[in-house]
Image (cartoon, rainbow, N blue to C red; front, side, top):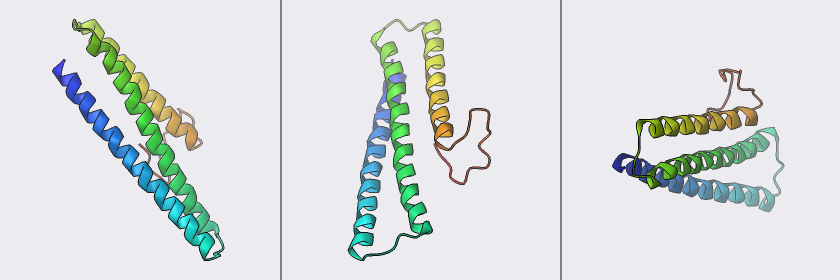
Length: 127
């Protein structure tokens, strides 16, 4: 199905971008750590928080990649079958909905929330 192939190509591109950003984030974190160590700087609470945020960013990007991979796996199952019926599309929709729910639950668990929390008190916006 042409539409699903286009979506798959877009998801692959998004995954590539996420991996590039993770590499930049890791490089940035390493450079900051080396600078702190080289200059024998004391790590205060603000710097510690900034370093933790850098780690959170990487974890969230990895979570996005996991969600993309799960979506692509679900779509691949249906792309292999040439006879996509309405029932199959509904199953795909359910599968992708489950992937989204799992991604949101992982985000909420990471930020110390349960799935019943509305997330309105987060200081940081997550995917």
